[in-house]
Length: 444
Image (tube, rainbow, N blue to C red; front, side, top):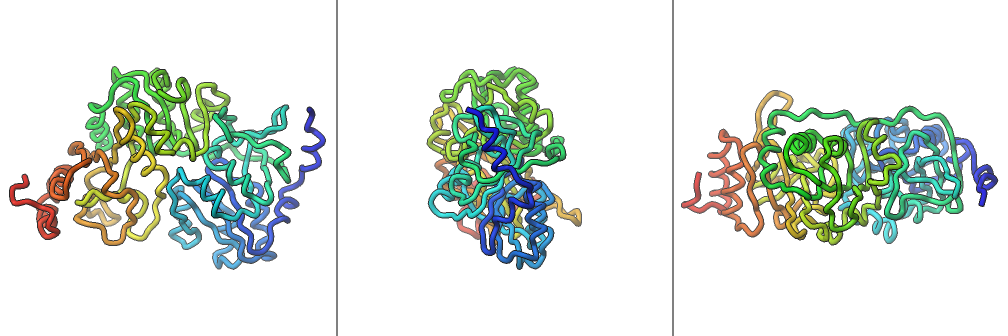
């Protein structure tokens, strides 16, 4: 069949398309490169005509015009499931509100609980069969579009086309409006060079790795450090099963280490939900038969992850307390990122045959005044708990790696303190005693 006539009938300008948004509507921008840049700009121009329009998105780069144009939030209010560095700054300014969520529940939230009056997403150009590829928004977009009363697609020819397991495309018959226009090159997440501390932490983790493991790596300098060491090592035949694909995986692929040969499910395929990185990485995943995009309801499902033998999950955190509770998304009351898939992969990797899950951090940090603080604290007093103590597995700093599974409170306190910077250990021991989680015979 030819879909040219249907495409032409649904084609309109961004300004025409956003006329469907009404007062009080919920509008969804999906995620990452799926951000509808032209539609966002056009909707912001309607500011004075609209009141109480709520927008959802996550991991979006700036600017988000609807948030920037209305500091009073009388007209537009923006929300994020997981903050990018830009969205974090919006939160700091009171222009973004975080929505807590464990990522494998994303589709279920939209299917059962949420209203979407208008969904807007950037997609690749239509193929000859009438399909538009959801690209790096595949992890979340399909169920949002199914839930929406009105679906608007924004064509962006720069987007990589991803082959998928399912829900990576939408057919023109399911679309209400289509807009076209010029787009800037895709935003990149700059490479963050690993620090010396990152490299020390990565070196502590490497002995736990073996050939044929399947990797989930978070984003940032530490995953790149792990990728560097794997690339330089004699280890081989790694697989990829990750909520977020970054340049760390490209680095492994270029070194010949990423083959997906021994995966027990999706053999031969590197599985991802979302991708953010360099233009070189976008080129790598574009129409690559060795890459498969799936919704996060599959990628992050702990049951699915648990079916992958030798699953290795490596994520970072901001702080951990002596009970083993982990804070990865806030600094005090300041929202930094989000829950994301950390808990999903902690749960799944710990049930995988031969699997391991690591939470990693430097032992200290410096504040803006140059004062050094310990990332290991006696107990939390306001920070958001991302991962409960009952599900934290391995913890790593530059001082070593410990396994918390099955350990009592005093055992946890002892091994967690062993990961702290030496300057803070005595104070942490005293705190553990005061909290009644320290034996007199514990090592100091």
